[in-house]
Structure formats: structure tokens, C-alpha cells
Image 1 (cartoon, rainbow, N blue to C red):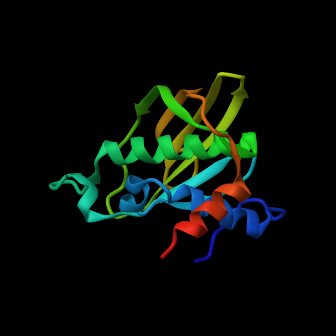
Image 2: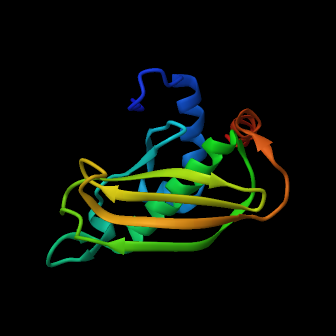
Length: 166
């Protein structure tokens, strides 16, 4: 798998570790979500076009729930990258403005940045798009609440995942 990065200085090993975290959730795996790029200021996850996720068979447009799941996953990743570790959290508020339908047959990218990090809350914003976040399918903002529980490093999380493989 070739994991792309928009930042030539990105550490490929670090990017591979974040990819493993991106695919932990069952719905992420089912939707085929894959890390596209990871930087502290902009994380991107790709949702490949899949006819099973079409919401309107006549138009071939992907269901809005796919975009919601894509952005929610991307927001979690942006927060983890900003923290530099994994911390239990829940989506407290998620607003999405759908601006236009996704183009049938095309992959969708979700990009996000964690722009404010507090002790209890993280604030993120981003967009879903095909080619550029400047021409979005949807724009979004969300607030996540840290829920307590164990905080683990990225390395510890990857080791735990490796230990779960058959």
C-alpha cells in the first residue's frame, strides 16, 4: 500500500502507524477508509467509491452517512495527531453543511485540523472534497469531549494491535 503525504518531510514509519489506527473501527474498515496524508495541520482520509454506499441509485451519489463517517474518523485522527497519543473521547457535537453532491464514481477525501485543544474538549474543522478542500462537497466543525480512561502512546497502540493479529 502506498500511503501518500502532502508533506515531503513526513516520516513514513509514523504515517504507517497512524494508518493502523485509522482502520481500527469496524465501520472504517467496512467503508474502506484509508489514510491519505497526515500532518499536524491537516490530516486526510480517503473513502473509496463503493456502489454499496450509494444513497440514490438513480443518481449514483454516495449516501451522506459515508461523508459523516469519513469526517468523524478524520476528526479523531486530527485530534490524536495533535495530542501525539491516543485518549478516549466521544463526539459531543458534529455539524455538517452539505454543499453539493459527491460526483458518482469518484473517491472522496476528508480533511481535518484540530485547531483548539483543551483539557476536556478538542475543536476540529474540515471538509469533504474530491480534488481540493477549496471546492468542498461538505464543510464541517465538531467538538469532541475526552472521556477519561487510559491514555496510550501511538507506539503502545500499534504494539497492542500487532498482538491482536492471528
